[in-house]
Length: 398
Image 1 (cartoon, helix red, strand yellow):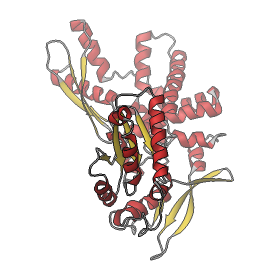
Image 2 (cartoon, rainbow, N blue to C red):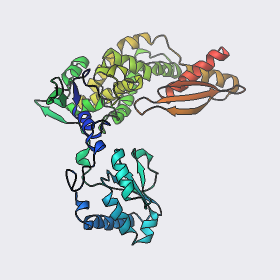
Image 3 (tube, rainbow, N blue to C red):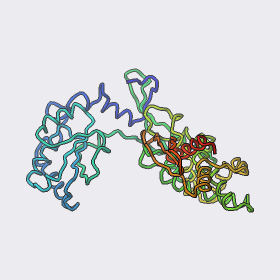
Image 4 (tube, rainbow, N blue to C red):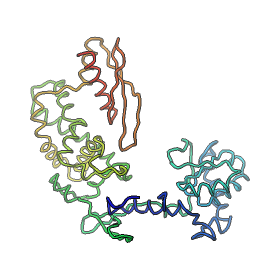
């Protein structure tokens, strides 16, 4: 455990260390439950509590239509007492019991060992990640679980947002302080003052960091950007045909261009992403690009079409001036070649999708008639297709 390099931690990371650190985590080194522990929970006082939960599970299972298979998931099972009583109680209702797959979600190896000892004759399974669950109906139960989750804490004061941190600069002593989220700096960078500050924060928040994230704003921003740029191109090049305008639009509205714009605004310094110990400068390029579009969506909702149009035309102005020389991307170039020679579109095939959700990696292959597949990789499926098309073009010398 190294704190000297950081000196301070966000509250959620501090809580997580206190509870689950392998060396000194509260739930990792001792059994805190029962008479010899620090506290006693309801399932350890009387079986009536767990029996009532079992009746509720039965009732809820019936309300779901009595599915033939369902997961019964206990989040943080403690010493396993509640799950033990649940199983014994549901045995009195064979249809429900035979349909049930009891599962315990637990992070502590010590508590898993205690639970397995108590439940050794049962059909319980243990998981450490929720995404390991089978895709069947699931009923979740938990007793005194959510109060032991690592949480972030924010406070709004005088129109500004602050996040709670824990400071360790003094040896053997920690104290709490609040760190301002630099909303004013972001607003200064983009020269727009938001009415709804939460909207601005959401536009720069990745899904790995919070449920309130930029995904829907990115969807909206992409459409807003396309509309504004298309409108400008029609005005700037009134005599061009639709095909040329389409290529100009594609050269101005794409992930690479959004990344360049985002970097010019230094958006990566403000993006909230749970990315292990890596600093923000190592945030995946795709996330930076996505935040450019989500910011546009947020500006549109908060300020309206006129403000977002002025903003887009201002920060895209240099790129619009360069659009007179139309750039044809690799996919378009390969498509035009294949249609002209074979009257068929290129065939793309997704080979692999790896990496964590904040830093995915895609591998795609492409071929045209009478050719072999050529592959390419990228942080998004679209970029992987572009790279595969580029490699194909270079290989056959188009």
